[in-house]
Image (cartoon, rainbow, N blue to C red; front, side, top):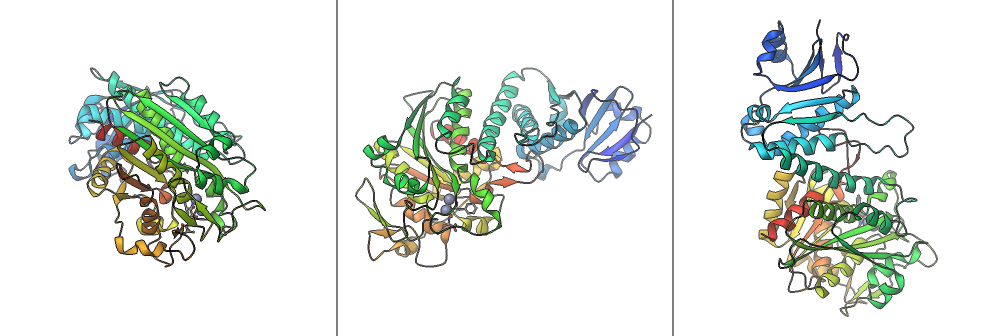
Length: 479
Ligand code: BES
Ligand code: ZN
Ligand code: ZN
């Protein structure tokens, strides 16, 4: 007896015979096993889904249709694996097997090492869910077996990439009462304790000594003191120093310019930049990458309070520049400025800052792309890396003639533009004023990329965007 269901929509046509705990085999449409079952080939051909499932007495066949050459990519491999992993998890299937040959048959344009790595990565990302506050049973994890020669390295890399991105997701999903400037450093230490990194945490007294005035100012209204965390990994100390600067606003109320609107609860994810950097450090350290990298995380809560910074006030930065606060909700750039100055002190050759910086970037690029500003050649490279690793992004311009929009009558410049246009570009131009001259700099605005809906290897959850992108970029510039 055999039954069919559409794995994408989880629609079951005639259900029976299949018992929990069985084995699934993932095969291609050309697999000879298909001919053993009458009408199965026709059924597959007629089926609208590109993944078709068939239950036999002994196992569950997951049949992958051939993918058009133009639609083939490592990302397609990941998304396919994520879909299958989640659906088999829902069916509580104990284990699943796929042969590297099957991947080669279905994804002719992707080399077998890359396809294996991507499949494993997508599998473990697809099984992700954030269940800390759910009473329901967590998703069953179907164990994946890859059949083929010399697959260990690809499997291991795929697992490390997924675990790193899932770490970023966990940090972003965590609720603000649990993850705040007081608890964040310990969370990082716990996760990275077995990795070959050194972690330094600078408390408020140290921040005053270091003149991290953006961070201190933004943190004034919170019961949690701001912290600055520096994580170093030297897989090869002879390589150029790469600094990854992450915005870690554990909650952004807007401050005295209090935010309004329905999506305020998403502002617990305003530390997505710091989460991306932390994920990238885990990825680089666990894969023993030959790089020399330092993470610079500004961790703070933006709260309104009698002690909070007021609009109109002025901050003096360590480099002597003064900034008038036009809007306390434009806090991200104020804290990133400290991180960029610190990158200069450490003599980093390459600097990337990453932040959920402006709502305007989501208007411009939507929810599937981050915007990348700065060095034009490197931002093109960043796009190419994202096309391959799934952290999609697009180069954006830093328009010199908009620079004057930041003018202030009272300080050297303001933290907001005087014009109601090009909000992401003017934010980038603000940051550019703090980039040390010796640094090759990129700025990634990931505000549109905070959360996702269930699709492929994404869940109804934080995305974990940026961990893979920053790690791959660091490796690229260290070649
Ligand atoms: N964290 C926000 C940006 C944001 C908005 C991220 C929506 C994700 C979703 C940032 O601190 C902010 O409030 N930016 C302001 C800047 C404005 C006051 C110049 C914005 O984008 O509206
Ligand atoms: Zn804000
Ligand atoms: Zn913010």
